[in-house]
Image (cartoon, rainbow, N blue to C red; front, side):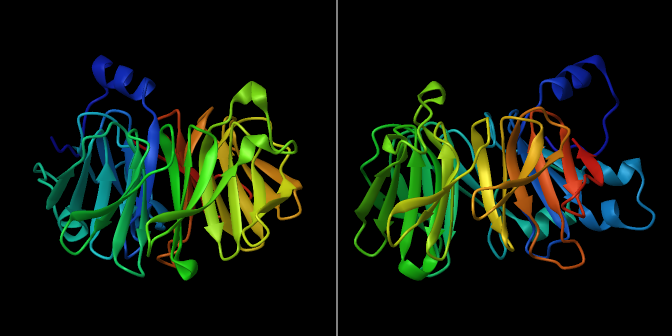
Length: 330
């Protein structure tokens, strides 16, 4: 069901108290933010309203909230025209034009694709061949053709859940990180694994007390960031060796390259700013005690913000990387 305004009933208060934000994605125009939570809901926020000169508390609430999946919304991703959402065994595509236009009625997805796998934890777009990589609870990476919605190949090799994916477009590669502690690099042209890096076996990265699972993974040209149980580390993909290991105490859940820095979030109530050499430059306080998702809006210079969500109904908004400006709220 879609909703625009709700009163703060005891049921709603309980709902908000136990909410976690798992996923985020900006609209193609950069004026809207979609966020998914553990209840299967997607909320749509207007950044134009929240950042405007007349912004007030109402401007920080969703313009639309609807139930997208029966279980959590593990992943959100935007194409040029659609918002893709992933839940337990299904991926739905929602027209951005319809989401922005409609506020009071329930929204049927324009496409729903079913997979016999639990927890679709990660999705990654490959613009080179207009495909979507999907990873989750069956230990495999599935490649979907976005032209027709059909799955065209399966990448097999992980021995446990897949948590994260990244596309290295220039090299026609997809990278996957899983519960088994491995980062696998796949050639999308042959569907073969060309490298397997077991990060937890490297003494400088290993943290046995946290486990071996890989929960965050991203690439930029010849560089890879990965972490989870092992420490967050920066790898050169030509030498396949770690060049920097970051002294962060908790398990990191999402990291990204930004300008000459690395931004990362996970266990702990902060966004960490790290330098490529391994130093932690700053840790900026956030509202959630544990953070699941970090996103930077590169689709609009006027609405360029960093947003952070986790174990709270708040999504913190940073207009400047040095401090939180305000919070959006489910």
